[in-house]
Length: 196
Length: 196
DNA sequence: GTCGAACCGGAACGAGGTTCCGTTTGCCTC
DNA sequence: GAGGCAAACGGAACCTCGTTCCGGTTCGAC
Image: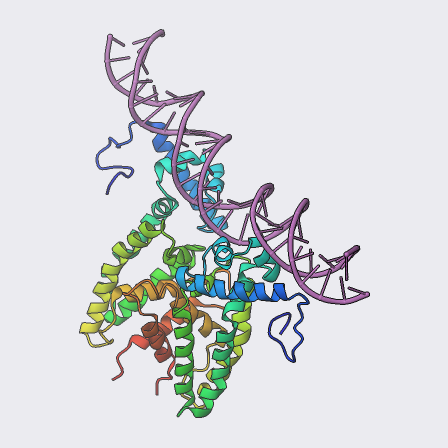
């Protein structure tokens, strides 16, 4: 919404087209490097892959976190938008919640190191943390409320807490065949069901 | 068991007593700094607190992970030993499991940053990871098996997976009042119960 | 064609973990 | 008690990584 990219209308904000081109190149390079080496790949690697200097990265993205956000923004938004859709099409609110969480877990688990960075208390990743929370917590809350209203689950858990828990469970889920985050998340969601 | 400290008999391995004294000083300083600044405190801070050079730290503890292990070894061992005891004194194996997990969570949650470092895929923390696993997974497996045998819980979850999940849930539990790891772990354990 | 603003690359800085090496010190022998 | 030497010490130096800064370059409006 703020300063970003291919915009409404046709006149993008950046006056100079080399700058716009570099931003695209950078996003592509970052995406590729993240897939290959994980989200914590050195900035210099991304700069090298894009064929630019590190200064160029920092002009377009004030901090590593902003670059990560930019790379994943579309997918996070898609996940957020899937929430209401699932609620409308699923048999029960609880089923919708389960499917949505599963979507989120799939996303996190396939992004090497993202979950870890998300929960890192490293200042500097705060904007990343905040972006995910701003975008996803309201959706989660909506699903949670619906399921609670229908009486399927207990109602004493905040969406924020659930999102953090799920995010935490996804840490290190790649790179360890013995650890299946999906299963544990399912267990957690199962534990949410109201005993009847 | 290997090269450590106050030993069987009276003749400790280290020939020189300044070395032994320094090791103790270092352990005390590290413990204090960990409490004050978290487990990820800079090595230089610990050295300064102990009044020694960083070289001295690295001679006694080949890597940061080894220092962390040394500081918490006693508590981890105590937790491991509590497992069989709880199994013997609790009403049901499931109750024992719950209490033991709660012990573990309390330990992790009160050690600023430990849980995060435990799951970090940072090479260099592998020995730390391995120590916790070696020490605690067998105990957890014993409790899990007992609870499964008694029919209280499903039996398709490995102790390793449960320990990692619980460890993950504890990440960032301090320093965030809105996140209560204990509750989520309880939910997870609740999700484990066999539907009857 | 000219000129200034925007942009670029990469050297430089600071922080943190780890290594290296010249110096100091405990202990054993004579 | 003196001498010798291996062990231990301290901290400067090195490496990696995120971020900042600045002199040079390029775009595009006039």
